[in-house]
Image (cartoon, rainbow, N blue to C red; front, top):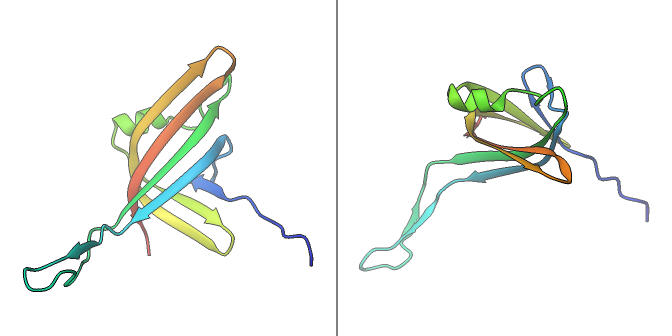
Length: 121
């Protein structure tokens, strides 16, 4: 039995990978819903509207953040992200809906960003 290799996923925007990013979370939901009728409980499923949310954290260095996420939220800028994992690259089109900056006494400045959109087929 050999040793398993577990690669690291990456996230990209524009022409390159986002280097200061860590802890990327991708959530895709179909919003399907169980439908019941008077005569038949569990009669079927309603196909909902697909939603996609990407959240990630990024460290802010002394030269500032890697990209101006706050400005992208304020301007409602539409763009795309690419999430790369082995054997799959997902492109998500949408925009940043929220940016949060946290600073503490004994740690680097941390930025959290939320990106909402849809997966491009």
